[in-house]
Image 1: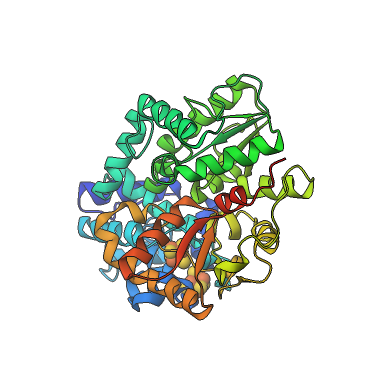
Image 2: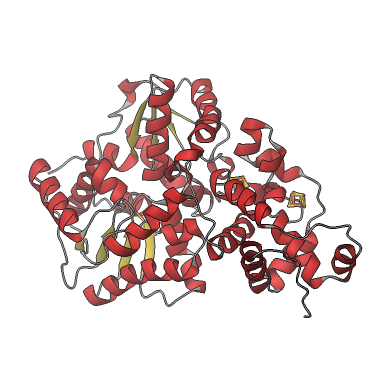
Length: 428
Ligand code: SF4
Ligand code: SF4
């Protein structure tokens, strides 16, 4: 394909070059298929919460479309030559950086409603890739990325801090947490959010796996499941952070890797990784493991344990339930734990809307006002179901719910599903 320089400045040039580099037949087909009908706007929680037309999914890929048309299509080239279409400028790149990092959680709900089947989430991720190449990434994300690269965790948890923390958790809750066990069957990888902010989740998963007699381990070099390379849109860093996990799995000789509570990590490792590298082990999510252990009778729960808590609702995480497919397992578990008080919020299952904190949004302080605005949608859903407890299988969602509920002063408890399971175990 012949190309034409449609840029005026270095930042824009790098971004447009990246758009062009990543525009293979798949991207081109997606862009060509768009009829500009605007139906996708209604599906986006950022658009729904604010009415801002710039938050319509189709507008978020506008620069990618413009670069594609102007570089590769005769009408696009003609429009530029006649001055009828604007080249992509530095200012555009700066502006779209805010839109695609702060007003998109990469949840891909918009793709569900597009009559042309366009995968907008992955396309918006392509836009982030161009922003990353141009180094126009929000400062808070850059800080977290550097920490993950240099210290091993976006929260800055070094190996030493992690070891101390795991030792403290094991002592404090008197639970066995196997570390670096050669020949274990299952490698469990937590997020540093769980290790540092929700240690009871680490305890819960350890208690469940120990009760089932699972041969499992955690890994010192493969200790962080979160991948900020995905949030940034940087394929090299994405692969680097993934390699830490797969190398650990290989050296321990495990059969499978269990992702605990991180939606984007699960999406990456379960699906996208296969297009980027060799995946040496089976990948699964902890909610599927728990459901399987229950089905096989390897763990038993106190039926109705939480019925006295009042209405309990479940939040479907975009990457674990909608994209990951683990929709039924949490419901199977909740029908044991709270058969009379479990309520569905609406919309739910694959149609659930994002919590508003995914895709790295919760890590960007400038995005806080918008993030709270979007959370109001979840508040309305919880209120309609009379929710007193909300549970979920993603620590990032849990962070968003915990923060949102505190911010708005709601009378709703947030609990991780694994912790509810662990507290209901019948231990013989
Ligand atoms: S719904 Fe699909 S076809 Fe319509 S504007 Fe959005 S991306 Fe384009
Ligand atoms: S991926 Fe999610 S947040 Fe991003 S535009 Fe689509 S619906 Fe909105």
